Image (cartoon, rainbow, N blue to C red; front, top):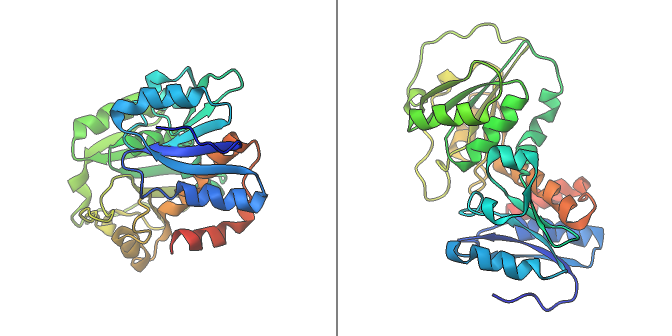
Length: 290
């Protein structure tokens, strides 16, 4: 591993594998729009090389930090000097910042990125809020945290119900939360929903199901209350079958690029001390989908 020779500020994304990452495109787009003389790249870091990577980068004053993706989001935690309270609570870091004294501070921008496209709904008053989260992997930890903090009752569905129950106990605040088997949602139901006026219902695929190379997510939309917002954090493909079926059933949908751009925006501001130019999001999305 070598330190970039260019004498300018830079950040990067690390993971294993990393070739598929869209982060360099996003941050490079914003750096160009801002006219900043800085760089953002991607670096493959194997699990057994994570500690050495941090030691090397920590010594470089031009290195502003890194975004962190699979499989390092939890493994990197004990290697950092400090965590923000949110990252500490989630137990996962997706952004590391090198501070002026050279110490490393771990952030989690996944929560803010995920919630960003829901803000117009969350800013309203509701009689009741419920989120059905499908999947119990690392991403679900951030979603359970963020949505429960927004006053939502969580129904967490996973292949392992005990794992879902433990995650709710650890991450969720308040409310009468519930854990169920993922298969509960795969077949039709004749359940009759109450009047949903004044309520907010969100259904989120937080699993890799539906990702390119993975089986589709089996979800029967008879389980979706009228007026639900359907959200899929998968980014490849952007238009998953889950979202296609949701649109066909008349539901509002949010795709994974919304969260990807949102979490990157928080990280960009941390790396480069200014917010990204969000007025170009439409152009950015087009580039990401090419």
